[in-house]
Amino acid sequence: MAQDFMSTHVGGAWSLERIARGLTHRAKGIVAKRPGSARLCVVCGESSADFGPYRGGWSFAPALVREVGYVAGDYDDCYCTKCSSTDRERHLQLYISALGILDDLQTTRVVHFAPELHTRSLIKDAKPREYIMCDVAPKSDEIRQMDLLDLDFADGSVGLFIVNHVLEHVPNTAKALSEIHRVLQPQGLAIMQTPFCLGLVSTGIDSEAARYQAFGQEDHVRLFGMDLFDQLVNAGFSYRGGSHADLLPNVDAWRNGVDPREPFFLYAKVD
Ligand SMILES: [Zn+2]
Image 1 (cartoon, rainbow, N blue to C red):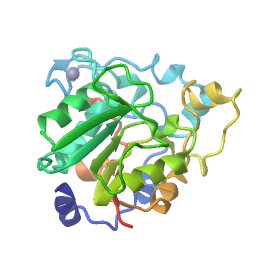
Image 2 (cartoon, helix red, strand yellow):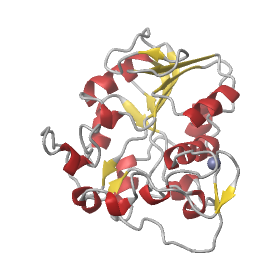
Image 3 (tube, rainbow, N blue to C red):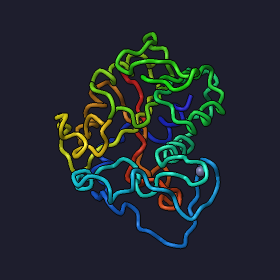
């Protein structure tokens, strides 16, 4: 299983918080633009002149979001114009490939919550022993209806759990982390990419009226602060990922349309 590779090559002593604190606190103009350079989508392999913006790009994000060092991907360079992949899918694919996580899934039960279209194909191609897709409001018959706060899996029954940009949508982070931890087998892996703010000490805004202005999306229930990392560790997980610079030293973030400040949220169940 992939954790053997990671324990050898990455090490468990890394701290995602240490990585995040070493990042530049910038919400706008994440990567210097270089007009004329071709962009490359790692998902479809196609080149294009540019990536398309998410919700109009950074200039349309609420002021608070732009001021608090929001790390949620690159709003200006989100969509591939050829395959519509998002920056979060491209970055996840790059991270997963760099750590060889899909190399040996034949004996692994994989659960993918709120599964993104292109990431689904990536997982299916790896031929895991079992691949279960879930969503609180599924739009396809192949996706099981399930609440992240009440997972319908036995204790210790999942080898790899993927929640990519989901925790910011659920009302109770602690309960969600507890459920993910419960269903993972010992040393099982969880990929939990989550937007967070370099400039927020703690996670705290919960007023209904302030959500759109504060969070930038009506369906986000919080902006995670730097306390996110303590929450993940306190839930019984050990960090197994790394930063873009450490894991993808030869990947040009601008060319690939990904946010180099977004680290790989890869965790293992340790107790
Ligand atoms: Zn593409």
